[in-house]
Image (cartoon, rainbow, N blue to C red; front, top):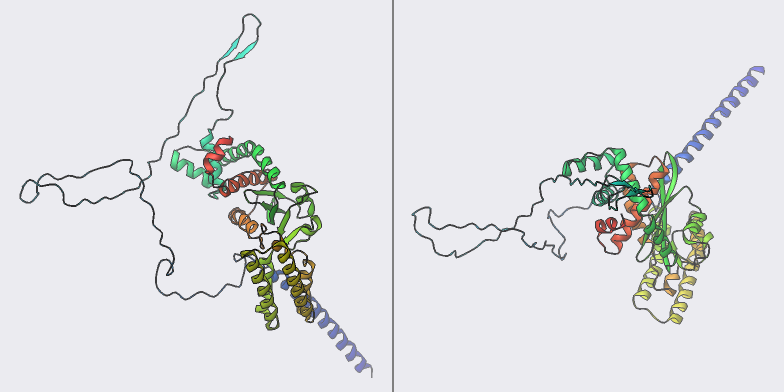
Length: 431
């Protein structure tokens, strides 16, 4: 009898041990699934996605698709001309008449690497023999060692051409035979950022007055810690700020506490906490719906319903009706969406998404009432893409000082390009 009891205790101990192993493995599986979700959700960028789209089969033909407009470079105006003439025939030595045909061949070439211009500013100091005052001759001597062209060029190499500091150094040495250390390059861009502070602050003031602002944010590592790059885009301005927080206080800092314009955004809670005058991004909603349709067959009908509602929104915006008619359509489409949400709630797998859509029910149709508002947040996402590419190149920043330089210079570059102005000349004019 005692032997059986011992055997039972041993089996119970083994079962408890196996249960512990199963529980630990369950926790590990949950953790791995959460980590995997970061690479397999509807909003994962293509660069991070582990699920690659199938490759399209090539038809074997190079060049643009059929019907695509042909691209041809315009011929530049020649800055010099060389004419090749023959007076006599090289075969029989006879005199040649006027040419019956002339070929015009253009050659475009860049100049040889140019040496830098070094200007010495000699500033004389005097002492007045009468009043003993110290007098400095009036001058236009620069404060720093480097000129405006050089500082503007270095800034664009770093933030427009996305070159690391060492690559900026090698580019300058190759083209102009000037050697500047990595720290020297950093000091130059820091000085440029200081000079751009006034237009940067004016940029913030203009954005605060905009009737619609497209806002988005993404992560950036600074000294190994998580910060966030925020972008605020209007019709003529693009602003970047880098902050430790992803909370409402960043929006309040940039837009003030009583901003009256429409904010186009994704579903992050900071936006709804800040304002009720929102336009939720349809691109996010449709991406997530399509992702669920790929995962669950039962969701395909709901995906089709969302796409149909969005199609109606676009059609109504293409040929705008009166405000009263648009309000009626808004109520009708809102009712359609509520019916879709109600049907989704019958499925446990879709309830989380249904709740997300329902929480933004008052903000999906703002673009129908205010036609100047886009239904998607693509403007902000496109603006943010440039800094995301730079983040992939540099990995992260070492100090907050680098973040301040980055946000100021990239904001001025993006805004200048958005307005169709020459970037180099614009930055140089501020220096």
